Amino acid sequence: MTFDVVVPTVGRNSLRLLLAALVGADGPAPGRVLVVDDRRDRSRALPLGGVAGVSVIEGRGAGPAAARNLGWRRATAEWVAFLDDDVVPGPSWLADLAHDLEGLEAEVAASQGRVRVPMPPGRRPTDWERNVRGLETARWATADMAYRRSVLEEVGGFDERFPRAYREDADLGLRVVRAGHRIVPGRRVVTHPVRVSGGTVSLRVQAGNADDALMRGVHGRGWRASAGVPRGRRARHLAVTGAGLVGLGAWVVARRALRARWVAGLAGAGWLAGTVELALARIVPGPRSAAEIAKMSATSVLMPPVATWYWLSGWVRLPWRLADRERAPRLAGRPVTSGSADRPMSSPPKAVLFDRDGTLVADVPYNGDPGRVVLMPGAREALDRLRAAGVATAVVSNQSGVARGYLRVEQVEAVNRRVEELAGPLGPWLVCMHGPAEGCRCRKPAPGLIEAAAGALGVDARDCVVIGDIGADVEAARAAGARGVLVPTAVTRDKEVAAAPEVAADLLSAVELVLGPSESRP
Image (cartoon, rainbow, N blue to C red; front, side):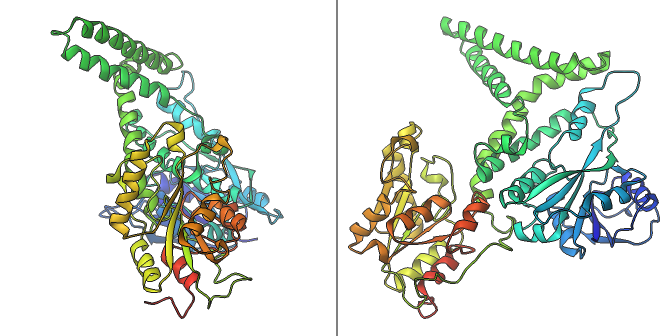
């Protein structure tokens, strides 16, 4: 068993303490200590403290996920232990790490160390100190986490679309677990002192709310429960912010409309009650000093709208973040195949049926706005190659937003027209607008849409290929007797990739796969 240590850093002075503690710890020495310098300003020397044997890697200033990827890809040992640059390993950390990793079963992908956050003696902890103490119970926190390097290669490492140290570790943990591996606790311990921060730190950390939209887009509605992440106060923040906006708007028009005064009064009372509740929730467990009470009162007024702003901005940017394949985890280790056992590559299909959202265009949940339609990378070129080869196309799409009341039929049709404006003619559109509980035969993974598309094109379903981004697309193809090709995106579950008969890295690769070598160029 061998291990390397990777430490991403932004140049904190605590790095010197970490390296000194690491060198002085009892136990086997790591193969390499890799410090990734992720500063954008490198005018000052890194605080390495004169520790020998440390390899410094120049980062891109793109955040901890990108920095950790640079580190583990440079590592050569069987295991890669990640430490944050503001923790201090205990005196037996190296020996305990070796004990934690020794003899682990093959299905164990990672070992998580314990984080201790010392609280000040003689007084209650402040709001910020309690916030940092949450690391003690955080699941899969990379403040101290060791991963098998082979597993990191399998799942593609950290998702660099997470630009801050907030959700990137939970995202990796979810992908590792869904790939069939286990993450187990270890006995080693690091100390995480609470950094001195300014009075607005509680507002600055609200920026992490923008990453929750990406977590929802990648891992689905239940990601919090799967990752052990508390729900927090978002619903209350939204309610308080909404009450404040309604009250402000009603107050502006109150001079002209008596009813607006009532609205302004009620909304203002709701905003005040929510703000006071938040302030008390933060003040009562704390030291209750005059300075802390003033700070909590002021920031409690601003926190709900700031958190709401970041959360909404995350949803606005979600389509572009989901479509950003360059910084998404690579498909290393996934079963990308070049053909199927029962269908030769040299025989192109008579028709290719495309899923819409996540396959032809970036997936915007329940999108009814044509202005938010963005083609997936390579979509136009892939379609042009099919047209040049004389292969018919159609679109098969679930749009349950109509049944749920989120969309009107006219909106779905407007979005479909915009897709064709960008991608060119796509043939017949077969759309299921039923909800999941209606038991229809058309909603994928049922075969109805595939069979209807084949009928509309005048071909046998067995002569069609279905290309989609989730398991339901492949299952619908299988149920109809068609050939299914999966093009995974960030939302595709690892078990769906493992179950797919054929997987392609992107849409253009999928089309080249189904056309065969003699037809892959127009």
